[in-house]
Image 1 (tube, each protein chain N blue to C red):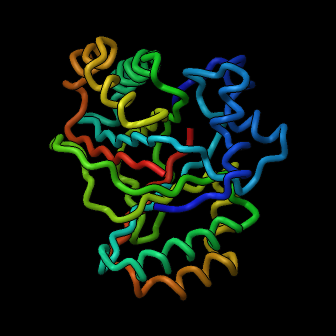
Image 2: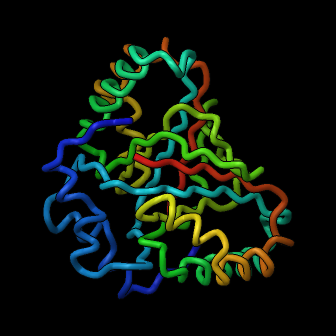
Length: 128
Length: 128
């Protein structure tokens, strides 16, 4: 699992939201870019570390408003697909920003550095 | 697309984050429950409205910290699956809360009221 700087986490969206007693609140107009990665060798700790480092670099693209990097929560429910290795959500203000992100140098470098690690990717883009 | 109360949107996570100049910040420990729905009749506006109303009821489960209800952003990229009808993300503090949500009366009512509308569901649960 990804390590996160304690200082950053303390000012995360969720922490901020809790401070103002937020609950059941919709996210404002937000482009959700959710990517699922299946690594070729998901149990290889070196591959995982390299991939996690890659994601930590990727989120430095300036247009990324916030992000969530996760691993699957196992489930016995039929409708749950817990077969992926990593879940990566990047939040953008709008579709235009996400388009710029796609060809940003940092993104291209991430693909170049890490694409040998995965065997399958599914992307879901949604806008509210 | 889902209509949202203006007042609520104004206090959304993103708006709050922007106020403190947040960027590239990871979400604090958060359970992401991302559900994709394929409606049987995605072009039927009455079916869509009934389903959207169902989701608006669903997010009232008290354990839902925030949510994002979206529709696909079309893409010509091979890795992008834009075939779903609705994307629904509910954020929970942890796995225990999400487990309680699964059997919450509001959730069971949503399934009872709306399951005739969809033909396919995929759930991805991820924890950072």
